[in-house]
Every structure is written in structure tokens, then in C-alpha cells.
Length: 178
Image 1: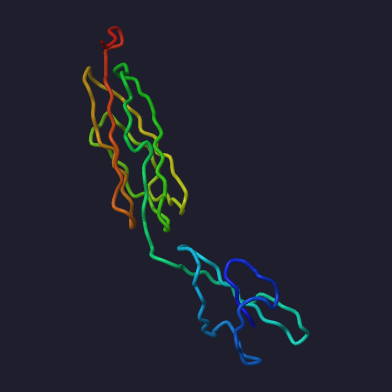
Image 2: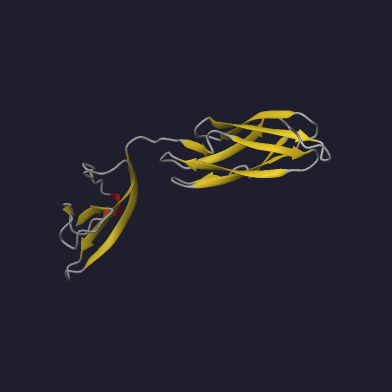
């Protein structure tokens, strides 16, 4: 029997494993050499050679090298200024949440500190490693004033939260702001 990690070096060229003929190899512990492997998820493949000289994959398993890191970022990180918008109208902007860690991240809650900014999202959305998720935030001014808010995206079980700033101005449609 032999094993290899991620890439098959060819039959008979992987790391040899000593086994006893007729033993079920699915329960045999194998120490895998992880030297030189990058941090992240890897697959180990174990194969055996029959008495007829034919190789077959008998076991495939996954394992992790390195620390588990839950991390994410929001784009645009500097926030968004919606500019001037007539009272009673709305304008949507997309914010991208990127998973920058090596664990999936679950979107738990999205909120803003001002009701004029309304996020649209699906709670429980899983963002895979290296994946992203778009959150739309509508700006809906209800008065002639300047609006400011913090957009906060919370996870359930991963990194605490990621935030960015929002701003915009409401104006009366007949009178454009100066």
C-alpha cells in the first residue's frame, strides 16, 4: 500500500505503507508527512495493490495544515457616499464581503446605525473560503438633511464583525442642494 497527498506521483511512486495481507486498511492509522505543504485543506489518498498487480484507491480523506483562521473584509472598505438624493426615492449600492480566511464564514446579521440605510441580505449565507457575498444597501432619505451611518456585518460563529461608513444627503426634489 502507499499514500500521496493532493497530487498523484504515479503508481508505485508514492510513500509506502506497511500493512498485513488481508487486513482492512480503512482502520489503520497512517502518519502523513506534511513537510512542505501549504496551510489549508489537503487530501490524502491511500491505495493498495492487488495480488494481480493492479492498483486501486481505497481511502480518501481530508486534513488541515496550519491554524484555522476565520477572517473577512468588506469592499469598499472606505465606505460609500450616496451623494444627494431626492426625499422619498432610493438608491442601492453593492458591498462585497470577501472571505479572506481559511474557514467558511456564515453571515449572521447586517445592520446600519441609521434607518435611512436599509441592507438586503439572507441570514445564514455561507461564504466559502476565497468566496464572496454581495450585500445591497439602499439609501432612502426622508428629510432634508445629511445622513451618516455605520454598516455592520456580523457572522455567526466566525469573525465578530466587519464595518464600513455610509453617508448621503436628502433634498427636496424641486430644490437641488448647493
